[in-house]
Image 1 (cartoon, rainbow, N blue to C red):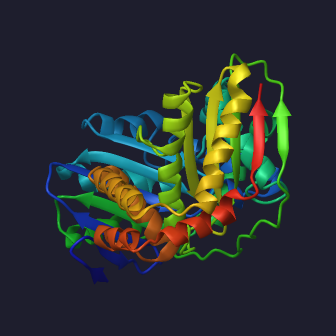
Image 2: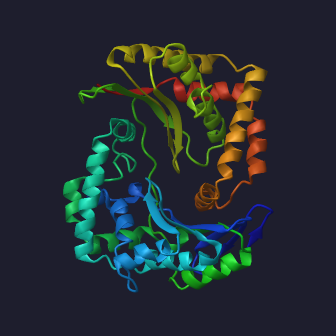
Image 3: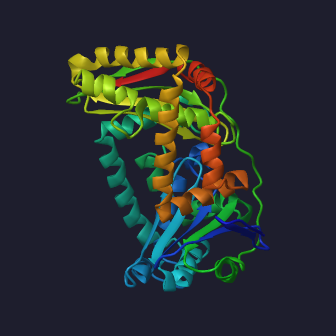
Length: 408
């Protein structure tokens, strides 16, 4: 049990951890964050983590599918879920007074889903539609293809959605086998935020999650082996060229994660004054979409720059991007530029933490992976302490040998 000004953590007897933040307001958010995603699938289970997430909503011991879907909707709230390579999250938003109902519903779908065949068959069609939609979007598809190449042969080297043929094989037993192995209570966090006390949050969690028998994960994740940089061009006959330039990066526990996050923001963050936006879009008018991103995983990560442009402009865009990467690797930022970049980054973090839902999801994920959560003040202090030399060092390590994937 631990309380700070910002949040309060607790642990249920079965190993499920909890985190709560009390804030003013009439809306409550909560989520069960499970440390299981597509990297935990065996080769004959690709796409199963995502299918299981969909299947949770198809009926429980107590409720039919329509009752699951209408339970919070009828109260003006919502229930949803998503899967990543490393976690599965079931989350709800309700009025403060309906918090206990939301927690009960999340526990019901997480622990008492029945996976009826008829409902699963119907849901497979929905996921096939999702796969087709995604194949029609080169800007989304290129990220996954790039990651498959970057982590080829490892647990991270396959797509979350899986393939249609495999999907058709899966049934309720396949989902039960996967969740029994991966959805263990020692790998779960119940995160909440709302205008009620930590005591209430813990009491509700105990009531609905506490009766689940304790279970412990019996396997460990294997870090991806070394990979070679690659350059690949794929003919997809798209209206524009889509390009991704990137490399492997730091895992979630690495101290260099913060300097890389700041660098990524300077390079191609959401603001109009990012280096790539200014040089490629504003100065030369070559690309409407250009951005940099950094996604950390447990033991590795991915740093990527994406752009789309007219076919004739792609090479010039690549040259301009390479030029910016070279500068970051060789020229330390001036004190003024660094100070401005920190100020901007801290302001963005502060604004995003104003969204109670994203704060709640981030805190749950952080407790799951670090068993700890930095307060916003601690994060700001760490950002302020970063030096220009640290940024050059990180840029040299991450940007000196990049891989490239182009869709034409």
